[in-house]
Amino acid sequence: MVCSTTQVADFARQVVGDRMEVRSILAAGQDPHVYEIKPNDAQLVSRSVLCFDNGWHLEGADWMRKLAANAKKPITSCVTGATPLEIEGGAAHDPHAWFSPANAAVYVRNIRDAVSEYDPDRKDEYHARSQLYLDQLRSLDGWVRRQLNAIPVEKRILVTSHDAFNYFCREFNFTPATPVGWSTGSEVGGGVTPERRRETVDSIRSFGVRSIFVETSVSPMLIRQIADEAGVQVGGTLYSDSMGPPGSAGETYIGMMRENVLTIAEGLK
Image 1: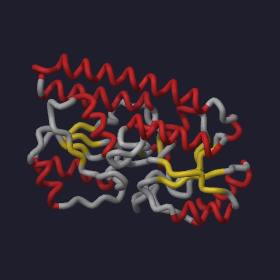
Image 2 (image 1 turned 135 degrees about the vertical axis):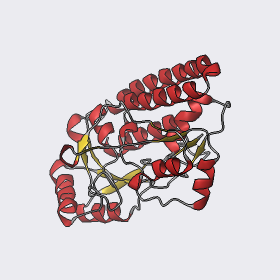
Image 3 (image 1 turned 90 degrees about the vertical axis):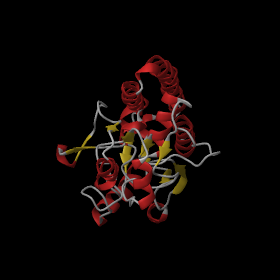
């Protein structure tokens, strides 16, 4: 099976184990908003039996759905059924839903159901593996809350490169502030404007923010410039639209979330 992003691929591996080969179009650190498909991507999808994307236009210009359509392969949008945050005046949904563990569970169930339909003989196995992972996601949610309890509510201002963490902020009672909208690309909601940059700097100063954060899949230049302008430190790097490379602390979804939480807690304490 072929997945658009590293986090979707990780969810898929938790469901199927070694029963199927799981491949991700994106590599660690790549940005799904601006990714440009390559000939070998089409070849990979053409050899697949199932395709999965995030959905809600995380994949800029819906590149994964186009790959699947051209190859006449079934595709499942893993975010379907998650509780959305509206963007652009309610015209669309913020696609970064996986940053809520409860929404991550929705991704897992959607993958489980699609795989079980394709391979019904192993349905019980896929459901059992999924349940084990869903239990881990519930444990992760509790761990995150315990770690973040040390940060006073008035200090829970999360300044990052772009609007990737709104679901995290909603789930764990943070206020987000970013210089770039939900997409790093040129779509509606993407790109930085002087007004938004100024609003971000003003928020940092007015709330007394001590640390702001760069992201692994976005150039750190803008955040570093804003940190200099606002007179604050860069508190570390957060995994956002992509997980970490193999062998890193963020090579899995759970590892990525744990590493992000530890970085945020250290930067804002």
